[in-house]
Image (cartoon, rainbow, N blue to C red; front, side, top):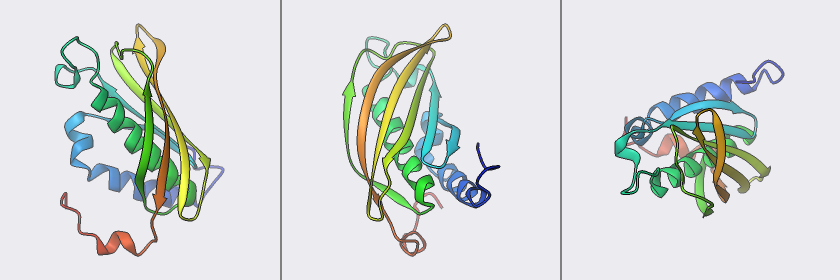
Length: 155
């Protein structure tokens, strides 16, 4: 994670890591927040039978989950405030076949109320990445006081 050139980002990154750690679904799926910097996020998941559909491909729901989380985290890192997915458009480009699924999200347009974030999903097979999905998301930026008022079921 890149915090050296942005000392204020260290506190933001720590808070986001703590929040992600409380997401039961991240743990259930086995997804890992592998990279994060201002306006970017990478989440990856290793292939497991529970994450595959009937033809042996990663299930589209796993791809959608990665896009949902990575785009929201990227938006949260860009402004250092809580964020929530408002909508996303996901294009599945090809079957997700491989040992690992990686989603890389980046903020296109940060906003006070809504940020626009793009994401690309890749499947890794024998060390080679194949582009399997792309998405564009609208992320609602929440005020700092919203998160403390909302009780987490994971807590």
